[in-house]
Image 1 (cartoon, rainbow, N blue to C red):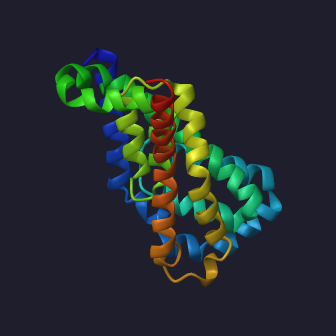
Image 2: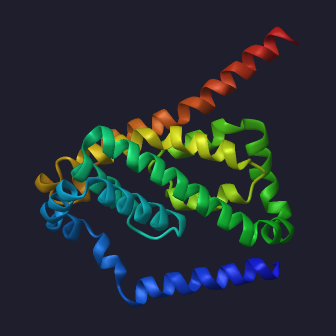
Amino acid sequence: MAKKGLILLVLLIVVVGVWYTFDLNQYFTFYYIQSQQATWAQALEQNPLQVAVIFFSVYVLVTALSLPGAALMTMAAGALFGVVQGTLIASFASTIGASLAFLLARFVARDWVQNKFSDQLQAINRGVEEEGGFYLFSLRLIPAFPFFLINIVMALTPIRLWSFYWISQLGMLAGTVVYVNAGTQLSQLESLKGILSADLILSFIALGLLPLVAKKVINLIRARRNP
């Protein structure tokens, strides 16, 4: 690992250590966000631009450092800004944060991991090269895959940053709308379990598999036309 990568890794460890040492996670729990909804709404009414900028910045930071709380912040976006504005804020903040996490992981560990585990990563690299954006798009559509893990894993592949960004933004949009919309009913929810039903999760999984299935069908048709 390069010296700069090692220094950055140490800084990240320090930041995460501070997060857990001072128990900052307590401010990113469902019940805390729910209890502060009225206070934030009042602050938003008095300083709408300032609140939006602060919220956006914190969301990007949390996502970039792969800290817990992104899903709850998406709900908070709905509770504070409504469906349309909340979706715009959460969508761009989450994608920018994911892209920063992608760059951090790539800068810190990509070369080392690729050299150390080149044989094991061949299948993943080949999958990205063959499926292209379909591979990432499918992963983004399925909530069962932790988004922060996708950021890290994709950073180890040959995918380009711009492709990662726009495919991620498009792929995460459906899930973002679901959480933002749930946030508009934040005061009525009893827990995060009230957001995603089993049927909705299955729908996301089916939606996530659709691009890959469609690409396989297209490739099959092309193979038959050009034997």
